[in-house]
Amino acid sequence: MAKIKIDQANDIAVERMMSARPILTGIATARDVIPNMEDNLLLHAGPPVEWEQMSGPMQGAVIGGLIFEGLVDNETDAVSMVEAGEVKFAPCHEHSSVGPMAGVTTASMKVYEVTNTTHGNVAYSNLNEGYGKVLRYGAFSDDVITKLRWMNDVLAPVLSEALVKSENGIDVRQLLSESLHMGDEGHNRNKAGSILYTAKLAPMVTKLAIDSNIASEALQFLADNALSVLNPVMAACKSMADAAHGVDGSTLMTIMARNGTELGIRISGLGDKWFTGPVGQPDGLYFPGFTAEDASGDIGDSTITETVGIGGFAMASAPAIVAFVSGTPQDAINATMEMYEITVSEHSHFTIPALNFRGTPVGVDIRKVVELGITPRINTGIAHRDAGVGQVGAGLVRPPMNVFEDALVSYAEHYGLV
Image (cartoon, rainbow, N blue to C red; front, side):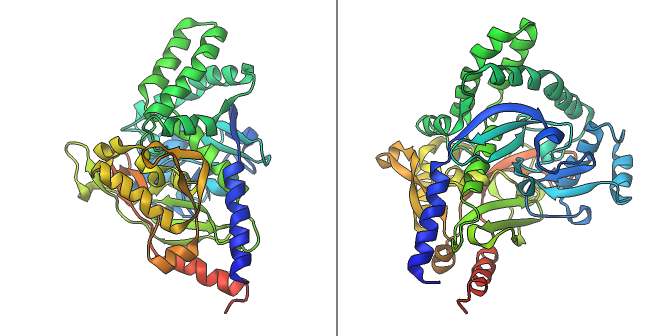
């Protein structure tokens, strides 16, 4: 395929990604809305992985998910159930979904529904638990399960009713655009976005609330969690990326995700094939009492943010992020500038004040990654390597180069370029 035709295909794909308008329209039960969801199916972050190859935090989240569902009472029974072959596993990405860190989503969990009103596709994500000892980092103690059930039974219905009664839902693209101008980068730093999200929900929640104590508790939970908006943002980003997938001839990356063992990518013009390689260990800052020796490998679907041009690609918008992931404000600017080298466009809706409102770098071209030897930047949380512990820090990491090289070779073979 001629270079000009590849470039034209990439222009189509990135334009679909940028023109996508994701609207948070509701909250529903996973089994009712996620395509092909089953009661014994657990969705997880990253490319496909079986129990034996799962990292500690992924196994911990699976155990917690089975306890949450009421299928087992304890860790021992959960492991026995899995080893007996009674549980199915699949990537969230293969079911129009995304989940941060372990990403484990079970049939009865409540999920955000985000509709791309430009192209008509829908994406889903579970609700965010906050920092620390939580399911997505592999913790499954009684307090973790109790919080999850409160979120499902109390928080979700309050937010769902508010969204149903709202006139137009919440425009997540607009919210992201505003938050980038307020010091967020949309992945690890979501303080402004979570404030905006809570502020948009608050009038609807208080207007509809029958029990003022429940309304107050729900809004307090959102306000105290600087990551409240991350999960609907991830679903929004998934809807944007999916809109760019399936463009014949495109070398654009439309998925980048990690399961704690492997990182996988998908390419717009190569269908549903995964290209995988070993995950790296993030380099960052650790909570008191923990070191790099405690860390699991990189994990999570939250790299869908980098895939559509925010997160590590928008670090120049969020100089304060370096206090959480290490580095200096200049490092944040340098990170964004480097990403312009491997992308095909500048985002028409996400702009960076510190760079004279230049659009964020968007649309990773695997040709440029391989040619220049520059892999995407990723901002990420760090999970403890053992199941049941939780988050131990945050930092920066890059994907393995081989996934881009393998994808480019496959592209050349698929399109008869070799």
